[in-house]
Length: 211
Image (cartoon, rainbow, N blue to C red; front, side, top):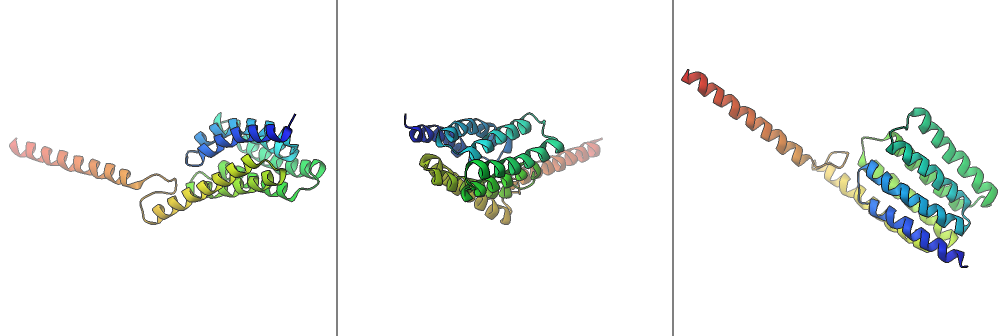
C-alpha cells in the first residue's frame, strides 16, 4: 500500500476545505469548515508519519469546537494554547527528531490560535496571521513530501495575504472598517435615516402650521 499516495489524497481533501475558507472573513464560518478539514489532514498525517502535525490537528479540532459551541472561556483558551505549545514541542522532539519545520508549523498554529481567541476587532490581523500559519504548514508538508497539502497551504497563504492587503487598502481609504465590512452601506443607511427624520420633522412642522 502506498502510504504517501494516501497521505496526499486525504491531505488534498482537507486542504480543499481550507482553501475554500481563505476568502471568508467570518471566523465562525472559517472555523466550521476548517474543523472538517483538520479531520482529513489528521488522517493524512497518520499515513505521512507526521505525529507533531497530527497532535496539532487534534488540538485544533478541540479549539474550533469550543469556539463554535461558545464554550471557549478564558480557562479553556489558556489550556488549549498551553497544549498546542507543550504537546506540539514534546511530540516534535520525541517522534520527529526536532524537525525545524515542525517547530515553524507549531508557531504558526499558536499565533493563529491566539488571534482567533483574543482578536475580535481586526480582519486584517486575522488574515495576516492565517497567511503566516498557512506558510508554516506548507514548509512542514513540503518536508514530508505531501505536496498536495503543501501547494494548497501555499495558495491559501497567498489568498489570505491578498485579502489582508485588500482590506488594509480599503480601510485606509475609508471604504471598509477593521472587520472588513464596507462603510459605504453604513453611511448610506445613516443618510437614509437622517433624511427620513428630516422629512418626518418637516411633515410634522407643516401639520402644526395647518392646525
